[in-house]
Length: 464
Image (cartoon, rainbow, N blue to C red; front, side, top):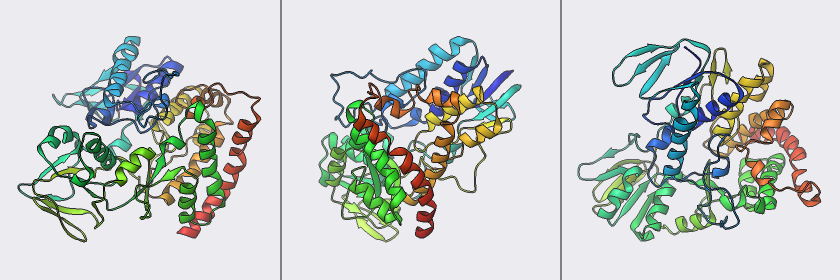
């Protein structure tokens, strides 16, 4: 018997759990298919790092990574980008040494929730019936819909004799080869290329299959460090101002690039995709040094000495190592999805772009402190993932509706002003209320947000 059952023990699930424990006296059963907390981080490739700053990743109650200090080089491309090992230790320590010792949390690992409180152990098949007195929390819906490199099944044929691996195996296989073909244009493909270059591979040894090109967020333009207050606030305000004034999607992309907030690897190719991947200028320059880029659609077969794509065949050196980076972790949910507060179920949908952990924590706060169903609904318009700039712009609308609603709920507004999961709070550290220049920068948000909210539907209609 338990008050809440959380299906999943990934980052979002633990972010929800953390706030629920802090704000209520509830008991919780966490049901997890894996044998350790941390969700997809358990299966991630060994050299993966956070894409966002560790300062606002994780759970509300505990900082992730080293505390900020004057000795740190904030211009380092890996500044505050925690490693896989750091993140797994963080979540494991939280579960074992913080949550379980409360006596209010039961962790059922290697188990799956079948629905209605029925839990099956994956090894024994034993079914446990759990009496859930409050609500079931679905934390893994988005993860289940996507795929990750370690468990991804390639969509192309691998001919006999060809060596094709997931990116997880790259450190083990790379020393056996002198030529490398990366399949996939997204962040995973970028990580594979950067790893090869940083470990001594020459750009001429790398072939990169990029059926699509992506707009990227320029990392140094959006650092949430007080030393970067002016540039970062300007970047965020500029995005709203651009969305408020442009008349088509191409203008939006062009102006985001001109403002220095977005950039691209190849300036001769106009990207068609945007997944909000973050990339420093130094990394983009290194990636641009890879000249053997294949743009002939998706791969249909890899073989020794060549590969076949939708738009033709391409030779590659014999004994090439093919690296499959085509898994898609971020998935656009089609056909609609359930509301966040759905009867006796809570669905941990996105409610702010790119920040599922912030959203999960805020949803827990609403569950604990805001019983009014209309206020809850107003605060939790679901934000979908996106593949293209147009889809991203469309998702700005529900995100702005949520932001406006949060500011009108005192308990939510107060929580947002102090939570470590709010990136702006780290940017504002040491803020002087008498600094007129900074106040003027912050003052741009209100008018720009209102104007963008009015213009975006016209922008999307004109670009349809």
